Length: 270
Image (cartoon, rainbow, N blue to C red):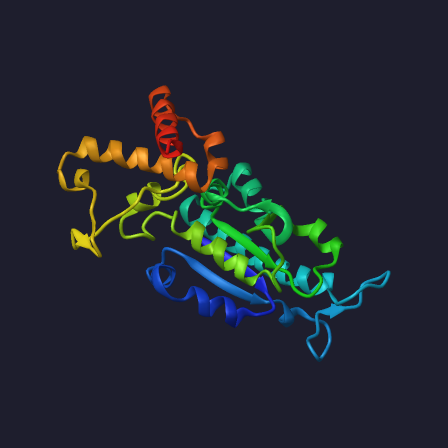
């Protein structure tokens, strides 16, 4: 998968993404991450990309043209790569292949006005071959270029940051771990928090007793069916306690709902 991050701070982005699991995946050729400096496409000698907003107001606004030129350079590179790949794999050109080459890349603008990022969205975006992430700054970006190039508006939460770089890094991390081969154990990406809208169950490691607290005996039993049942129940209970809103879209069996009601009642009873 290929990430293209349009930003005013490329070093900040790349320093954060060139380490740990993501960095190893890049080195292994499983991911490609580039940070495109929007200032490189400024049309003045000082490489300034901002100006005062029409109508007045506090702060500065990123101008449309540098953002558009940065996007255009990336989009052309994507098209060229697709064309080369298509020629190598299918020498006989077809109309269908031509339409695919003309398809605009997915462009995500990181903004508090966007849809809140979640695991389901990460899974959807992980199916893209190329993803362009546009990082705003100052008081935002000229609306005209957003209308021209943006396909998705995404927020990582209901708060305001100084720029889109940190949200972009969050998205790259969450999406990358869903790309086959990025995690050493591909199963772990499937059974983590938010699987089936449930939070992850409690996890334990050695020693068996620490600070007077023992590992639940079921985990030491070796009985896999009982362990899976316990983990499922703990996921349900933890979701109820910490993120009850997620249970609204969670498919629980009648038996599981009855069990949860009994657990809640037992905790409420003095």
